[in-house]
Image (cartoon, rainbow, N blue to C red; front, side, top):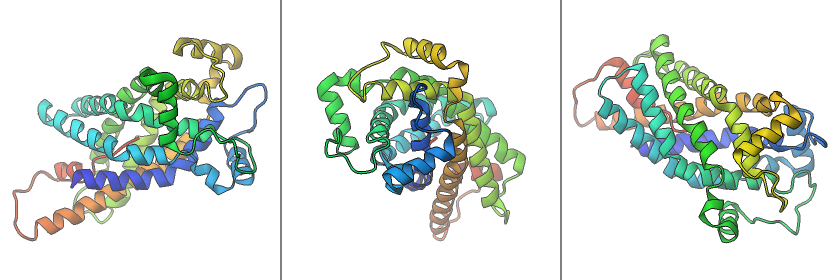
Amino acid sequence: MDFIAGCIGGAAGVLVGHPFDTVKVRLQVQSVDKPLYRGTFHCFQSIIRQESVFGLYKGIGSPMMGLTFINAIVFGVQGNTMRLLGQDSVTNHFLAGAAAGSIQCVICCPMELAKTRMQMQGTGEKKKSARKLYKNSLDCLVRIYKREGVRGVNRGMVTTLIRETPGFGVYFLAYDVLTRSLGCEPDDRYMIPKLLFAGGMAGIASWLSTYPVDVIKSRFQADGVGGVNKYSSIADCVRQSVRREGYMVFTRGLTSTLLRAFPVNAATFATVALVLMYAREVEQGDCEPAQPSRHAQIQQQTQPSSL
């Protein structure tokens, strides 16, 4: 049931947050010499005006396709790691989250590569281009594989690992600390608002901890969309970006990311919590299992699904 709830919760998060993610990627990779967008809200307005509201949802097929596998990996690895570690401590929540984050990169990296390429396709075009390079996210990955092989499909894997490993650790740690601090109890009438707040703030904390790496990952994965590669390596991408735009380059798109982080994780937590609580109420109708501690019940009912 955790698997099903995680998938539904993750889908809700993707639907809520994908427009913000599109804006984030456009701002991260736009040219500093000829910028198309002045900021987050101008980018939103421009995409809707030039590409319609559907432009904000470009590349959504990729995260939706990878959602099932990512949530299965995250829930399985995090849960098993916590059982292996034994103690329900803040440190162990970080370590379990970090383990889950690192392993799910196998799916996350190709998924985000296709998402980024699809989001960059047709930038600023008022009408659908007849010469569209990729039909959809799957076609994008197939074309990259045919042209560049396995290495091309896994472009940006190192930066994804560097982002996801500590990012998920901070995410699970922040959620655990916040739910304990807020005193979330199963019979609390304000439990759902508290979980929404904890999930949203955990998402913000996670993004702040790894955002500079995400900027480089987006730039490196978007490189070559126009047929010309500007960066020979991740280190070269960092050097060129800092030399041309200064260290503020690492904050490109941060506003849209933080605006996205709270509602995405709030939606994910609320959906997971409601699905799992309903399922467990149905199960308890037939039998009365031994009750775990109150905080353990909350932790079991509302495990986060994805960043």
